[in-house]
Image (tube, rainbow, N blue to C red; front, side, top):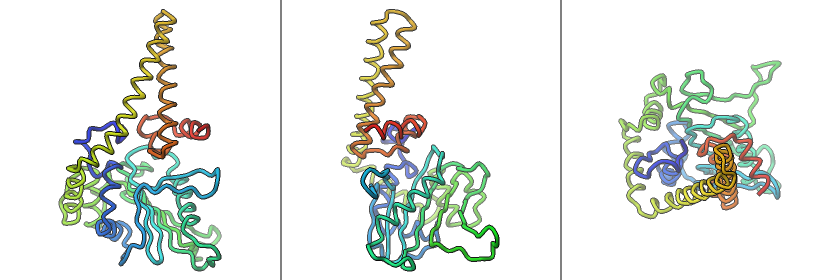
Length: 285
């Protein structure tokens, strides 16, 4: 079930919309990174949620949930509640896009910043039952050789929170998985979620996307019924409805992609449609 199919009242921190709003708070964002990545960030130079990045003309654009940088690091935080297909490849692309979009001309390679991609997955992206998966690069011929390209990829599995030994990390994972606040930090997150949800402007923004989706779904149903009536047979109705819904959904997807309302990955998760199909539609936009 995608986030925009949920009622506003049912949203919590694990829903991408709420997560991005809460992480706009710099202090909460810094504390989150200190707990999950053990990073001590004194000052955030740039922080943006739902950061849209297009590297070059006609290249694949992306939208990062929470993107920030300080004096020597660039960091992307992604909240993922489903659709774990191609997660490692997404991480690779996000990492390169973050570099290209932040490295000034004539920067020496030795001056590249540390680059972190953090995926917070509500469920297990690899199915191994571990609370955390950390990617490490090695030299195949000699693992003792340090391979330090300043890139870091971390994937948390919130469903395995009980196996996490670090108490502060465990409390965050449990909060995301069960929406249960039992530490000073998670209680601050819970309060921030409540503050977001009482704002009518936030509710209106969320409902706007829901309205687009509901309107297009209704149009798709009408097209399907009309096609079915024209054919006059039970098979025709079923076929016409399917064609109409498919056509209507395609228009929804194009509208959402063209306005940068949702990424291809988010649409795939929301409508439970293969990502390859959404990417094909995106190429035709």
